[in-house]
Length: 466
Ligand code: SF4
Image (cartoon, rainbow, N blue to C red; front, top):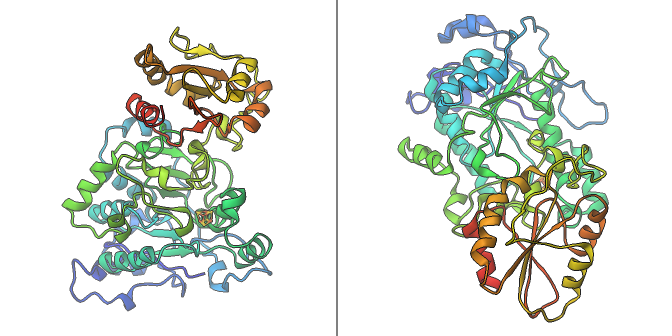
């Protein structure tokens, strides 16, 4: 495993290719060779050493596995960890920082955690995080997950970023034995057959877990507008709900999301204004960038997450890196939340308007069986307790009102509890909400493929098929 200190302009201010033409990448400290950075080193670079808590350690704090092909250097653990992060109320801090700029948030994060925080870099527009960190003038570290399945353009971009900022990205690789077992038993493209979770677990989640075990905090490029289904509530800072940090145990890791409230267009305006290099895949229509087999360009007007795992259900598009975002109905990937596992109704019903027809089980069974319908139908499969269903209530009701008298019927079918297995088998239910269009002259319903559930998007879907 190649591990390198990601030097920032402060740790390695003199290395920055932008600030110093004498920058020589070969002289950048490399954690792969494991050169602990002690306070003497820092003082020689002008870093405020009082800010720093300990020695630079690799992004890997697990004991060495005998059967692992992970190089020994990656398992060396720096012996000195003495100081604990002060107790902080992160919910309150998140509220305090809600209106802060990304630059302020990153500055605060770097100030608080020094060398114990890392920027997670995917090779996409989250390069903005590196630019912001650079602008703070503080030391910073960057790590990236090399799944082995990235686009060549992304690898080239990593190299460009390293040279541009005079840094070394700390790459994390999957365990070779685990990859070997997966590929030998299921082939190279098993994710198209049985979902992306298993492959992501091996190639992304476990390497990420190893990386985070060497840190006390991490910085992500998550934004609310990236996924209405899973990212609509992310705070600017939070105690990580899923992963553990250096000290182990719940609450040992803090997750910073400095661009949570920033729109994608504003990120791009920032990148252009600062002349930041970007992945050349963006020029080919890619917005969200991940592994090559699981990412594709999107068309104008399509949501960026529609280019990821497009063969799967729209609301479950997290690879596990941010699984804390998946609550209630999505937590186990089945669309059935623990609280409501028996389908008991603890929430008031939704979509309650005369324009939306409530379909019973026989009603929707009839609709499915019909070869010829008098009129086409749009039907939402929902659960009243599902917050994604609740979030689309307004737009669905408005759509139903607009379609009244148009010849298109709008209905709803409650598909949780006892109806769930039927809906999964017969109605393509993946997770809630699932929206189906039943054309007039075809028995086969067509599933709405997008996460965009605003009135215009739903209307465009109906108009394209009616
Ligand atoms: Fe595997 Fe695709 Fe996940 Fe990459 S994105 S780890 S190739 S399933």
